[in-house]
Length: 256
Length: 256
Figure 1 (cartoon, helix red, strand yellow):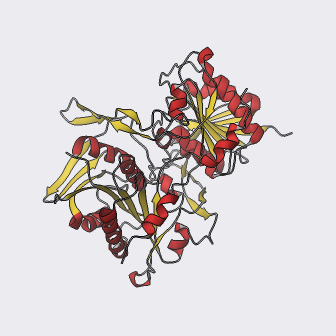
Figure 2: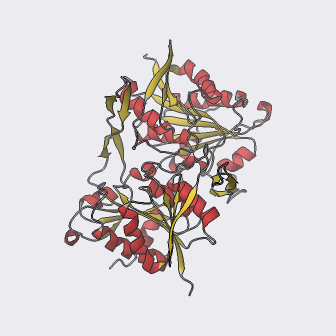
């Protein structure tokens, strides 16, 4: 049987510890090509670079593992991999392991998940992995163990058409984990508090800060509940923005 | 009755003709505050600026209309407006009129729609408007006429909780328009063909180009069909990435 060809990306950039850890987890499953942003691209969502050209650079090559850095976003990285770098369509795309949560509504801000949904649009089974710890030197022991279990299942079963996975890991000692919970995305919103400062030249500038407000903290079928209760959360995701339940309401409007 | 407070943004930037046209359409409905990127931010999706500070600058102020430019993305613009610029929560957010299509899967790449969904997350009835013409001097006559009809309805009826609108206008003579069609997002994918070039210093670089592949060109309930058949397309959208139909499939996996 041919070895699997697996594309890896992330949004923390080619030098992130979480990326190294995901490579270690994935390498036993096939030949790995990494195409990841050269610098941190957190919060870049599904952004693509249209007003500037993008560049790619081969970083290293060893048996079963080739790495490229990309000057653009995570989605640019996946697009360039599929169009210019890989000689065939990859069998799977995995993204992460992100330094920080991508649960609930964070899925739409996340560059890690941007890479995943881009793979999904192209018919490639894809999954993103995130650890609820922003520390550049975070402990990925638990995340690696459970990423491997989940990747094993993705490779064995594939994924339903148009579906990918958003996996998040709580920050708890490995022996306290209660298992994996397949759940839905909690509803909530990030409430911003911009930190206003004055630069050395007397002008204002603002840093984005904020807290997540969970609209349904007691809903046991959500990713937020799972993570707070010491589970790994696995949310199967798809991208269709249509609000089917609103179609009939809007159709009753008078546009004359 | 108090006048409505209406926030306007876009992704083509504060100087775009489409933004000027949307302001003209909206001003009869209330007091308008514009917070838009200082430069073009097409393709920025739901990106937020986390690694740099952002800045805002008041551009102009006249009765019923104040304009600010923002150094960040469309979503940054909305977040700063809600958190730092506006003295109260706006009644509505409108974004556009975009120079270029945001139908089908383009909704996820679009900065115009990023601003809209950010408004929606914050409980504000929001709608985005896009004309299928990238020309900086495009003719917005038809787009303005129909934007006004739709905005009139949004203000009259509001929108269901968690729902916003993605409106696209075809490029046809105004007298050929067949009306407004409320429809779902077509399924399809952008197939990239990166244009590889060599810079004056001998290094490769790539420009993103591509064509949209519609997976269901004959589906009459889609936005792509509506636009091709001379309708204005109105897609009610919401953001919940959960694939509810996949939950039971993934729950059967063996994670031991």
